[in-house]
Amino acid sequence: MNLVLLGPPGGGKGTQAKRLQDKYGLVQLSTGDMLRAAAASGSDVGKRAKAVMDAGQLVSDEIVIAIIDERLDQPDMASGAIFDGFPRTLAQAEALDAMMARKGKKLDFAIEIRVPDDYIVERITGRFTCGKCGAGYHEKFQQPKVAGQCDSCGATAFVRRPDDNVETVNKRLEAYHAQTAPLLPHYDKRGALKLVDGTMDIADVTRELEALLDSTR
Ligand code: ADP
Ligand code: ADP
Ligand code: ZN
Image (cartoon, rainbow, N blue to C red):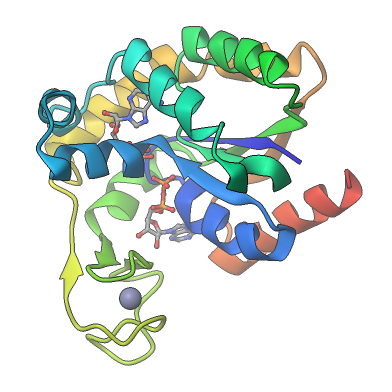
C-alpha cells in the first residue's frame, strides 16, 4: 500500500505517519526530514534548500523529485510508503505518478487531513521534537509523560525547527493554499481522495485513518 498525506503545515501529517507506519508496515517518507538532513550535512544542495525553507517557501521541484526518486529504489520500500509533505505542487504530483508507474508501484490513495488556518499558528509555534530520536511533541497538545524527558528514548534534549515561527508560518500557509491545495482535485478526479477532520484529538485522527486504511486493504 502506498498513500499520500495532504494537509497544511502543522496539520498533523508527521504525527500520524509515525503512528501508522508500524501498524501497517509502511515507511514514512518526509521530504521535510530529508531536506533537513541534507541541510545538516552541509552539502551545497542542503545549504541552498535551508535558505528556502527558513524563508517559508518551497524548495524546487527538481530537487525534491530527485530525492524521492532515489529513495523509492531502496529495498525497504517494498512494503509501501506514506508520503508526508510530498507531493506539494502539481508538477511533483505528476512526477510521482510517472515514477510510480515506471517502478511498477501503485499509489492507492491520498488523504487530506483538513485543518483550518486559524489552528495552525498554535500548532506550529508549540511544536518541538526529541533531539535524539525525533519523536514529536507539542507544548499543549502532546507533552512528554515525564516533563523534560522523551517518552520513546528518555533523552532530555529537545529541538525546535528554525522555520516554526509566526512570520514563516504565514508564508508556508500561503504556499500551501497557492501550490499544494490544487492537488486535492488532482486526486479527487480519479476517485482517490479521502478526507479526515484534523481538528480532532491526535488519537481520534489516528482512529479515523486506521478505519480508512483497514477498509481499503
Ligand atoms: P505536520 O507534519 O503536518 O507539519 P505535525 O505532525 O508535526 O504536523 O504536527 C504539528 C504539531 O501539532 C506537533 O507539535 C504535534 O504534536 C501537534 N499535533 C498534531 N496533531 C494534532 C492534533 N490532532 N491535535 C493537536 N495537536 C496536534
Ligand atoms: P510542514 O509540513 O510542517 O510545513 P515539512 O517538514 O514538510 O513541514 O517541510 C518543511 C519545509 O521543507 C517546507 O516549508 C519547504 O520549504 C520544504 N519542503 C518539504 N517538502 C517539500 C516539497 N515536497 N516540495 C518543496 N519543498 C518542500
Ligand atoms: Zn527521544
